[in-house]
Length: 153
Image (cartoon, rainbow, N blue to C red; front, side):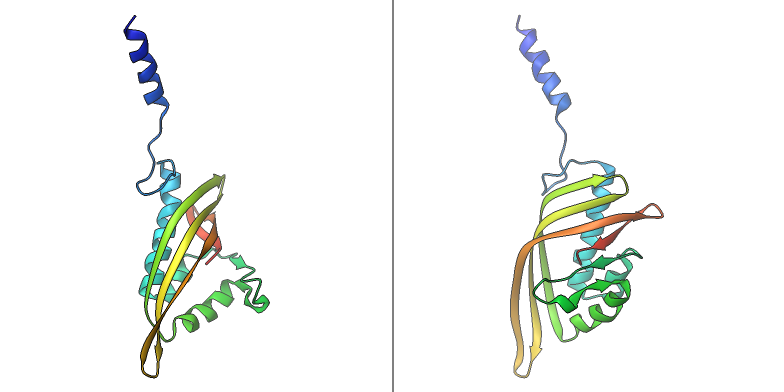
């Protein structure tokens, strides 16, 4: 009779899934691939590398932008113009990302996360630090077998 609880425990253990460290996201190759693109985005942001950021965007990239600034809609060409301009004068940048959810459906994916960006900009007497934080959603699409960002930069 003592074997029944052990079998039940073994069955439950077999059904459990590992998660990617630091997240509640199931550890599998597809999820890791999407989160790697998000990690590359974080790295490019912190390096203030406009070319690296743009290389992560899908050819059909489009983002409506901030509703408070309706002129901020961006397609890929808009990113090519705005990203280098946005980094101008930024002396340092740190981005923290807390993954809330990851959903993959076929060749599309989305990651919901809470982002905290701290950055220093040049001012006449040195630099000034700012912090922005918000819930965010980044969408992805597969392009030639690789995940690319389709909106949310």
